[in-house]
Length: 172
Image 1: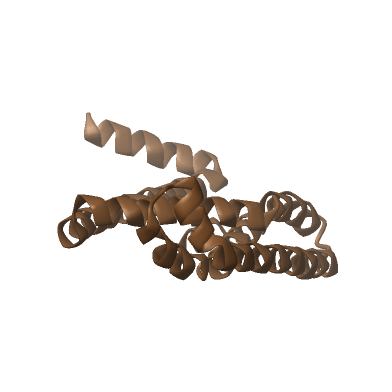
Image 2: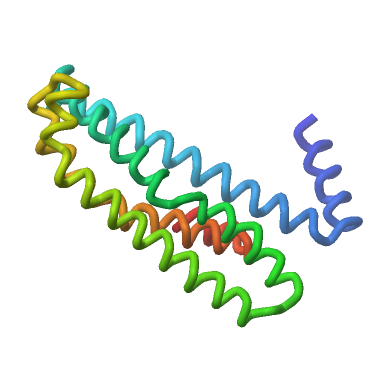
């Protein structure tokens, strides 16, 4: 049965030249995502053992708040980069892609810096008043410093997807 499936895939690949490219990209994507999930599981187990249940809870609460801050700080720019970079690239308008890149990075950087500043200044208040967890303040301040780099990584990944560089976007 397995040999039959392999023969069919090879036959399809000969008939459709883009199919082999899609299958190759999909297999690389699957493998990278599988490795990332296994590493994530290992990290979660290690974190729970090192910090205990309460410490891990504080960590994941801070991570959730900063993840939300990152989403707000990106202002939907990654989706716009994906959509419009693909359109510009299809028309081979590389100046348009470059302009889109500059503008998207500028907007997302300023918004992410604003969100980071607000979280840095308001971390103590958020920890005490919203979550009633004073221990959350310091991790929230530290993790808020990751908002800008993480946002830029997401933007670059979406831009690469829009340019058709799927494998490269998975590594970003």
